[in-house]
Structure formats: C-alpha cells, structure tokens
Image (cartoon, rainbow, N blue to C red):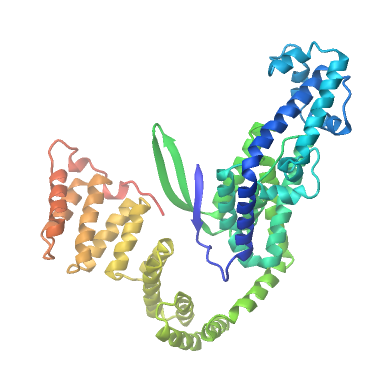
Amino acid sequence: MLIPLAHESLKGRRWPYISIVIIALNLVVFLGTHWRLEDESHKLADVKLHILLLAAAHPDVQTTPEVQQLIAGVQRSNPKLFARMASANRRPEDLWDLQMHDWDSAEVNAQMEALAQQLADLQRDSILERYAFIPNKHPLASYVTAGFLHGGWLHLIFNMWFLWLAGSVLEDAWGRLIYPLFYLLAGAVALLVHAGVFSGSIVPVLGASGAVAGLMGAFLVRFAKTRIKLLLFLWLGFRPYLHRFSAPAYAVLPVWFVTQLFWALLTGSGGGVAYWAHIGGFVFGVGGALALRATGIEHKMDQAIEAQVSWTADPRIVKASEFIAQNQPEPAIAELKQVLQEEPDLLDAHDLLLQAYWRKQDFQAHKETLATLCRLHVKARELEVAWRNYEEYCSAGGEKLPSATWLELSRYLETQQNWERAAVEYEKLAEGYPSDRASLSALISAARINLKKLNRREEAVRLYRQADASPIPHLDWDAAIQAGLKEATAPGLASPSASAPLDKAPVSKL
C-alpha cells in the first residue's frame, strides 16, 4: 500500500478556509449519520433482496411502480444476477426463500404488498435512500449530498487526507470561488460516470472520493513536478515493511489512475468500491485544470489572489520582488538587506536574495545564501528542502556547513536509508570540524553505518579508532566506541575483503 504523507507545495499564500470547511462538514455529517448507515444498509438490503427473489421466482406478481422500477433496474444492470435468482436450482438464501416457491398467487401478491410497504417505510426516513447516490434513481440533490456521507472512519480519514493534500494548494491557486465549484462539479461528474456504467444499479454510492479524484487530476496538471512524500507499507511474512521515499506527481498520480482502471475492469460492479467514479472524477480534474489554464482564468485568479495578499507582506519584500522581475538585482538586494537586519531568519527574504544574487552573478554571495537557507530550513524541520539547498550549495563549490546543520542533514539521510551518502557526509563533517563535539558523533555514526549497513569492517574499525583517539572528551561515548570496535574486529565474521567495494555498495537514492 502506498500512502501519501506530504508534498513540497503545501505552503500557500493564505489559509485554505474552503478546504477546512469542506473537511469539517464531512466530519460533522459523519458523526451525525454513521451510527445509522450500517443498520439502514442491512435492513434495506434484506427487503430489496426478498423483493427481487420473489419477483424472479414469480414473474406475474403484482407490484407498485416503485418496486417495478427497482426490479427493472436490476434486470437491466445485472441480468446474470437476476437470472440466477430465477433459477430453481440455486441455493436458498434463507427459510423464507425456501418456502416462497410453494406459495399460490394470492400469498405471493400479499407478500409482495407487505415487502413494498416495508420498503416504502424504510425509504421514507432513510439517510441512504434520501441522500446517497443510487444510479437507478439519482435525484439531483444526491449529486452533492452523497459526497458528504461516509461508511466508516477509514473511508472518511483517507478521503479527507487526500482532499487536504491536493485541495489546499488548488484553493491557493484558484481562489475561494472557482475551487469549491470545481470540487462539487468533479464529484457530480464522477457520480454521473458511475451511473452511466451501472445505470440500473440499486447499490447506494457515498463518499467524497470522486470529487477528491478530480482534485488529484487537477493537481497532476497544476503541480506536475511537485515531489510527493510516500510511505510504502507491506506485510512480509509476519513483519511489516515500511519505506519512505519521494517521487514527482507526474509519476505517482498516473500510476494511481492506472490502478483504478485495472480494478474497475477486473471487478466490474463488485468489490464495494466505485472505481469508475474515481476514473470519471480524475479525467474531469485533468480536463478542467487544462481548460482553466487555456482560457486564462487560472492566471487571472492567481493575479487577483496576489493582489489581495500582497498588502500584508512587508512593502520592502514586495518592492524587492518587483526589482527582481525587472532584472534590477542591486536595488532588490538593498531592500532585502534592510528587511534582514530586522528579521534575520525571514525565509521569504533569503529566497528573494538568492534570486537577486544569481541575477547579479555574485556567485559567492549566492553560495553563502544557499548555506543560510539550508540552516533555516533545517531549523524549520523542512529537511527535504534543506537537502536540496545543500546539494545546490555543493554544486556551487560550497565545502562546509555549520556543524549542527550538517549533522541534522546527515541524520536525515539515514532516515531516507541513503546509507552511502550519509556515511560520506558524516566523515566530511568530522574532517571539517575536528575540534567540534559534533565531529565525534559523526565519526561514531559513520562507523556504525559502515559496520551495520554497508558491511565494511575495515572502514568501521578505522573510524571507531579515530573516534577513540579523538582529543575531544568522550567518556559518555566510550562504551559505544569500544562495543563497536569489538564487533568490527570479532573473529568468525565475513572478512573485510568480502565487503562491498565503495563504488558498488547499495545506494538508496533520495
């Protein structure tokens, strides 16, 4: 199972109030309805099953128009199922089913009348019948109301999490008028596609997943290169396997779409998941986002939002942005330096300063700003962004970061299971700050990775001995160093020469 955790475009220009309201409405509706939905579902299914069994076994039975619509819908949408119900050789569903084959016409009509009355009574107060989407009836209001009903906690949580990831940034891009209209229209189109595929189905459809699929399709168009952080969860034997990684939206979302298409073709009307609604919503989302871009509406809304939020920013930031847009880096740098004298850690100012130095071709200042951004993103726990800053810093000729920042980045590489690069960065840190206490921690970490993850005992021994010989006081770490040395030099293990050579060691890329 792949679970999205976050993505790098989550920060918007203003609070996504519409997304928050939609999520809150779904939660409130769920809390008010979920305790009734399961009970209703069982009772309605039981009555409908008996109606269909009776009609299949006794085709001449008298019915009401509502019951006839129900029967005709099943005959049209699932003729094989109805044919099996009519078969005299099938296995009875219950005692009632066994007995009703021997009833005369009067008893059959009486039973059908009673069942029709039960169905009418249940439908009168039923949340499912009034607000869920049922393809063989689909009243207009249900195109909206069905999207706010959910069958269970997991159903709700996953839909709302996907909505937040995709919807909050689309709201920031499109504004608080187009975004909710797009969301509701995507949900309606998704249900319309489902009804087109299963036109006579009597199974209620509920949930926001069709509308959310529309947001996912739009996200693919609008933020195709945005990297999505994912968690791969698998059961291997009796043990769970977890692996975190990131991939761009243009790789992740098409895979999701193909998976939905595969299951839609495989399961047909079964499976309990409205895959065709997901497909319809996603395709609408892609087409709708392309249309908003082609017509210029997206650009106009972006400008309108920018005009609304710009007044809240420091006017010097706004002025610097304008100077950069006009390719005037020097006055932009002057404005930004004034801001940073008052707020030294303001990320927006440093981001603009980076652009200004690049335009001025002041590569030394550009490199120093990258180091500062790296430190600030580490401080904000935005480690993936900080790592990209660091790689750009290294490409620009940068050699060493502040030791605390460097140590956090090396630890981040460990969480990504990028053992090779983590060991390299730990060693570089130790070499760059030989008198800093962080260098001792880095040496021990590099030794541990070489021993435990890369199977390089000789490297591990060298690093543990280097840590042991360090002039930095390390009584608190001495036990760990000695234990590592003992393990690395223990007889009976694979010889150091059998370990993977440096250029062929396994690497997990970021």
